[in-house]
Every structure is written in C-alpha cells, then in structure tokens.
Length: 149
Image 1: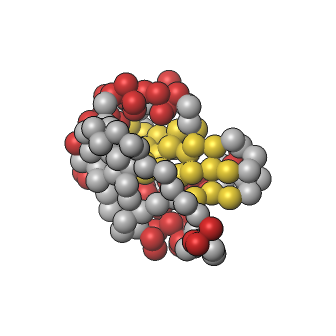
Image 2 (image 1 turned 90 degrees about the horizontal axis):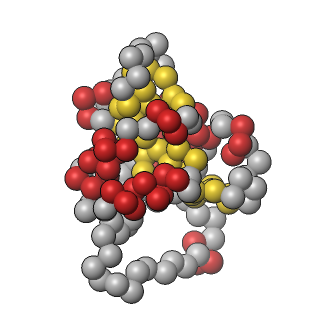
C-alpha cells in the first residue's frame, strides 16, 4: 500500500461525521441513515479505518462479530478522491487477516457490485447453501438506512 496511507482499528481515529456523510449520502446500502444509528453501530462493531499519513480518514469498514463463530463485514468504502490506489484491496486484506477474526467460523457480506474484490483479496465465495439462509426485514416502512445490498 502507498506509504502515505495506513489502516487502524483505533476507534479514537474515526471521523464519525465523515463516515455518516458517506453512508447516508453516498452509499446505496445506508442512504438516509441517522447519525445516531451510525454511532451506535460503530460502538458495537470492530471498525477499520484507512488514514492518510497526516491522520485524515479516507476509508472505513465495519465488522459485526462475536469474535468466535460469526462475523458480518459491512459498510466498506474508500472516498472517491482516494480510489485507484489499491486501498480497498488492502482494507479487505487487513480485515481478512486480522488476528481477532482469524478463528471466526463464518464471515459473511453482501455486495451489489464488488464480488471479485472480496473473492480475490479476502477469500470470499458465494454461499454454499443459500437455501439455508433467511432474513428478517424491518416491519416499520419508515426505518432509515435499509442495509440492502
């Protein structure tokens, strides 16, 4: 990775207003999500940040996990002006090789358009038995941030 960037799990380095702005305004999976929901989701997740050498956050990913049997990788992004430098690849590699996630039995994610990135750089594949999986969607049609991939 370009030496002017680094990845950390230090939550003190998170720029929550920037994360919220991207998720609620630029992502297809969390459009309109309230900042309170972003804060709560961060508080209850293992978070990864891509930072510039001067400490500005330019990328983010969140893993919801019990650190033993299950993990869900979500909300992966790199700001547009920093794309094309391999940062997304390095971010998913860092997540896949993170010591606290190395023994997790199953890690899932949902993506609309980045299947090859996750397959190639983090070892993801399609569900072996998709017929076994179910989902429960919110019953409140006014719930913001649908998380639909």
